[in-house]
Structure formats: structure tokens, C-alpha cells
Length: 339
Image 1 (cartoon, rainbow, N blue to C red):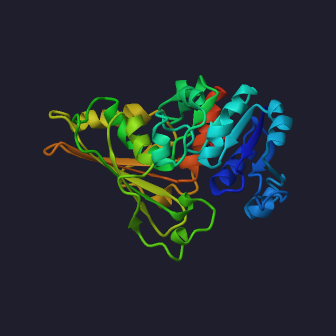
Image 2 (image 1 turned 90 degrees about the vertical axis):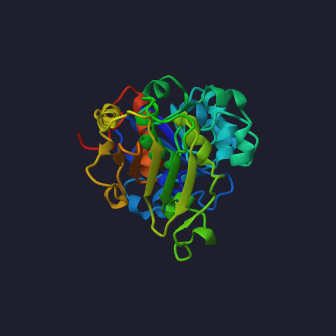
Image 3 (image 1 turned 180 degrees about the horizontal axis):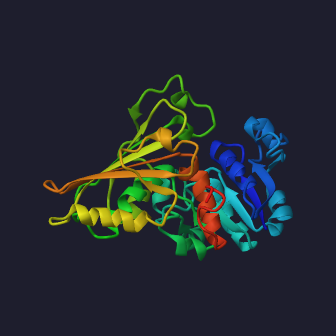
């Protein structure tokens, strides 16, 4: 039984994570933690998120150096669903205390420390931890996840995008230096729980944002090993995310090769479903699944791949649980689906 804390339990992704951990037979959920000055301190988790009443009624504790000193040595695992700067500052301290860290923030996703001021707005405080951290795309990096004490859980847009890209890039099917375009659409819960007029449901219309400068662009490029143009969009619905990727494949690549690439990648990955028609967010919302479909034009050597996920689950909380499972030697889907 793993003694677990969740830091950032009051947010949308943190709450989903708590719900998943409550039903996990290898987890003893010991502490739910919020920021030091949070107005949620002292409240029961179920007061903040009413659907978890009688499921998780733990109190929300405030993080501090004193909290760390008192509790860290008794923990096996900590999940961060925190601001990026917090995980960048504190992850190594937990690792040094013998605690395995699963970080749902962007604090360790980019390997180049020089990218953090540009894309995240802060200088990375812990270069050694950044070098040691492993990216945790669950379907692709099981060995890395199993061998590290600090897992950078991928972002929601990169998860869907990389599930589309990696079967093709890893098999060297894409034209070198060609234009790779990723279009993503997310619901408003992707912006987090804090109130903002720009993400208020009543104010949101379908629009592109942060084009050519979004923090997930270098993450996708890094992990796909190919430069991409990422065009994110915000849409007026609660949850779910759709990524559609357009790629130019090498001359002579056939439909059969593309099909083989996707089937080899995901035939033994139960949380990625190769579906017969274009994915719909309604089919994955509130689930840990990624639905993926592709179409190849052999005459033009162009393939279009689309993937739908729940941004709070497969794009955050349930993928973090997949990484946790892999670290324990369990099947990545353990406790997430009925098998």
C-alpha cells in the first residue's frame, strides 16, 4: 500500500486525481494539500467538490516548509497538481526525502532550461532535477517511467497530439523538415478553476489563442522529435479536447504501412482506441480513453490523424495514475477500466 499525498487537490485536475486514487486498491490517501494562503484550507475536500461526499471527506491542509518537514518522510508518493513554479521548486526536495513525484504541471516537461522563461515565465530553479526527470507519456515511455523518481506527466494538448504523431515519426514515415500542423480544441476546464473573464463560459466563443507561442508547442516538438506548428483553440464547452494533425509522408509510403504503424503502437494499449470514424469528444468525456482515427491520401502522400481525450483525465489525472501504475509494475490501465 502506497502512502500518497496530492498537492493542489482543490483544482479541477487535482479533484479528478483524488477521485481516481480513492478507488485504487494500492493507495492509502493520507494528505490533500492546497497552497499556503488558499481560502480552501481547513475545508473538507467533499465540501469543495460535492460529488465526492462520503467518497473522500479528508480535510484540505495548507502546504508550508513545516508541513513538508513533518509529513514528507512518511510518504511514498506525491502528486503535484500545482502551478509550474511550485513543482520546479519543491520536486527535488520530495525526491531527496525518498518520495516518488508525479508532476501534472509543466515544471519538468521541457528538457531545455532556457525554454522556461519564454514559455512559462520563470527561470527554472532546479537544473539537476530537470535533467533527471522523465517524460511520462504512458503508452510510449513505460521504461522511463518505471526507472525514475520524478515523472513529468504530459500536458493535455501534447498527449492527444503525440498519440497521433509518434506512430508515424517513430517509424520514420514523415518527410524530413516538412510542415507538420497540429490543430487543437479544448473546453474551458483546461484553463483551470480560478475565475477569469476570458475563460468564463458565458464569454467564450470558439477562437484560436497563443498561436505560434503556446507553451505546448515545444513540448510536442521535443517528444515527437519533429518541429510542429501548434494552433490551440478554446471552445464553449466544459471538458474534452480534440487534436488533429496533418503530415506529409515520404514518397512510397503505403496505406498498409500507416495502418501497421498505428496497430503496432496501440493494439496492446487498452486506453487508446483505434475507432472506425472521426473521434468525438462526447465519446471520451469523463473517461480515461483516447479515441484515434486517421485517413491517408496516397496520391498526395498526406495523412490526417485526429485524437479525442478528456483533458482532465487522459490529459492529466488518469494519465498520472497510469504512470503511478507503471512505476509499481502494474498494468497502466489498472483501476481505470474494468478488465
